[in-house]
Length: 173
Image 1 (cartoon, rainbow, N blue to C red):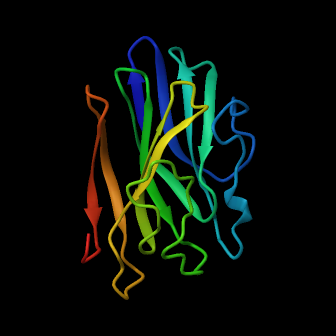
Image 2 (cartoon, rainbow, N blue to C red; image 1 turned 90 degrees about the horizontal axis):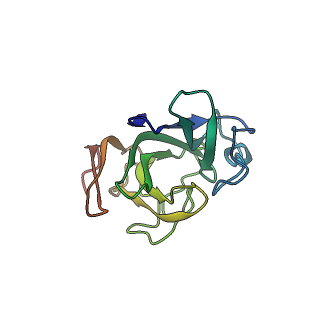
């Protein structure tokens, strides 16, 4: 996903399956952690990178993830410069991680993965060096581990809140 502050910078998010993200040395998470996922195929960490207005320089970056697979699908920047991402975290190892965490958490609304795939939302300071808050958002699988949630929109409001929209296959969302 892409968010452009006209004349200032371009912010992007997605998923990375490699170490060495440009300008990540001062980010909240400086290295790729998903490769520690035992039994995973194609593990990934979400990432954020900020380009200058001319798209010639990456000024800062960070990874976001611990194990399994995380993808940043949406990004927004508040009027105060805070950076928000929303995406999905997925149990790709088949290790049935319900009730566990596969993302760094801070001030969470929901602290555990509730099915095979949940939405996450995270807030970072303008430098991407500090995680200000993060949480899962997802319904219980109710015996069906194949439920999932998806995020399609993310909006940072003027009062500092975020609004996310998406879809779920969970019967208990």
